[in-house]
Image (cartoon, rainbow, N blue to C red; front, side, top):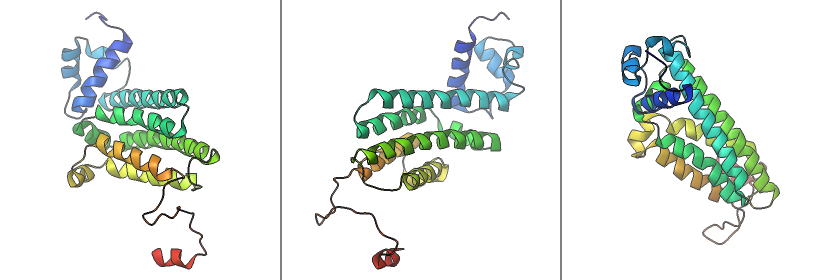
Length: 211
């Protein structure tokens, strides 16, 4: 078969298939038939189906990272900047089917790639939180703590059990987490009795009772 479409278009088509159907149940022969190409073409990109899937996933994640930073760069307001940054991940998650999520979590290479992507995204969030604290817009919380809590939460909501128990899709959970992060950080939030929130000192005996 001739090379009817460019590499970019070929990978775009393959991406749509993997996002909708994952990779474990699809054979290279089926992919070749659907994309109207030879089997040989797949092996120009990767040594096997699993490696090909990781290549496509890396492409998806890199796009989310780039779009997130571009949107953040274009937004001057720090609260909206974080919302814009996180929106790239939410939109990316909307494209991921449940079977895609299951397949990428089914083997070590997929989990490692996903974890690395989310670590990069959370490191970016941490830098934006630090900017917001420096501007006085966000409360003087520890940015590393905020980032790590967010990372652990995202890893948790990737799990099928979370979706079953919460009744939420992955993208819906990310959208609510985005709201929670941004408006939980804002400096002028007041408690129910009108008091301003404050950092808890480790020497505060009330803090010891809480934990």
